[in-house]
Length: 309
Length: 289
Image (cartoon, rainbow over all chains, first blue to last red; front, side, top):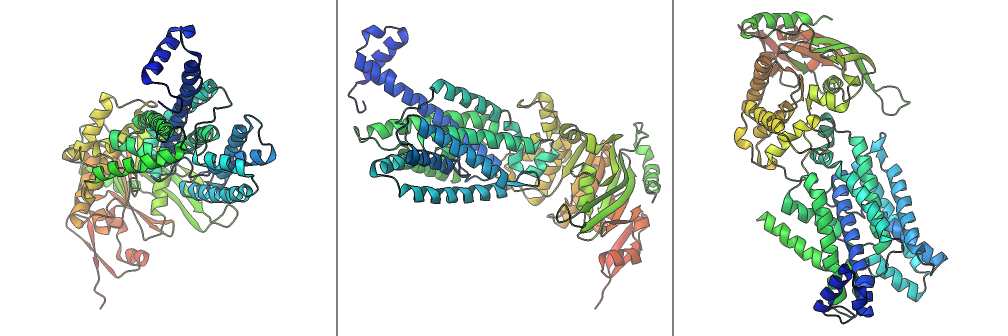
């Protein structure tokens, strides 16, 4: 299985012994492949998938637009710009690219927040327009900067723009998971409010929802999740758009169910896509972002057509 | 402008149908309420509403009438506490509406406006249960009481059979009933409706007004309706608030408010008013050709 020839039974044996604490009985290369490379990568995939899908579900409610995805407000473009700036200024500093990407994402969501306000609170159409315009503006700067990159950096950058799980996170995964859980939890507390906001903002307000506060929580939460995912894995497409829709088709539109379902579904989708990306043309790797789009679009169209009939 | 005279009349007429002791305090008290719109914070106001003063008891149905842009919906929003008055106060059961927190307000006042389009499909039952939101704790799934109240609300509007239908598949009249059911499941004291008859055919309009009348009489709601339907308002309401360009021209019983000269001037149309034997007026369009 995979680029390094290791059979399924050997993987199972390694996992079993590893869990049982019998590390000395495992061949060292197996230990490295399973615990050093593949498990962290799967853990990263779960993190990214859960973050992106939850962010997508959140943005779809916040913007009252089923076409919204985690990148619609320009978070990924901001992150990409941060990454590319760090590549231009100080290439080859370990961890800097992720940090710069996160800083770029944070700067973007802050700017879009102030552009997307009207009458003292976030206004969905204004926010959407502000986000789309910012995203295309940032993309233009990225295009401009990419012409200045050398061939090797350019290739790395392109891979990164498509989304890729192969570079291990510079930050301890446990920290990333901690942030993920905290943010997921805070978005989840707004889920019954989101149900009402989806039927109409005015009505939600009349029913006692503090729309302003809910929007702020979801905006910040979904943006942090997106920034988190993008800065460790690049802009993996489609997952954040498709998974919430697939979950809606399967489980209905109640956000109290939809948010956990999306988090789980996103995690599963990314892990499967990444596994395929690594194995289909092994030992070469496809970018996982290409795989999510290749596999995601047909799955989505199938579900959508089935629902229509 | 005193407005209690009309309320007194309808109370007298229906006193025998009321087994309960009526709360002596007015359910809704509107005191010198005014409001102003301006294009920006600094520019002079483009539109001024009020000052409006009236009271409403439980079991009363009040209709707010007036031409377009006369401030009807604005007045309704002021009553519902959605916007804060520039001066004056609105009280429901003795509590100032502006001072209530959002959930408490939603337990007292249900405001039905023109509905936004649904983004994702929703079942009637889920929609009606949303009216229970102000009673729920964060994240809590519906309790037995919530289901009971939502069921009662559906029954009150005669929409039991619609329970498992999709909202998008309902006819205009069915949808309006379901929207009303969601408002009722809030168990409000005050029910405010902004042009609820707008998309209904004549049968649907009559049915809706009759239902609101019944809800006020039998379930002791105080109902305030913004409408363009002069004759339906005359037929079913206890009192009328007639607005023109933000000014409350007259507040009183339909017979007091429906004066030919007044209506013709306000609505800029050739109208005839006749008083029927029931004591309620009827407005007819005068032939002008």
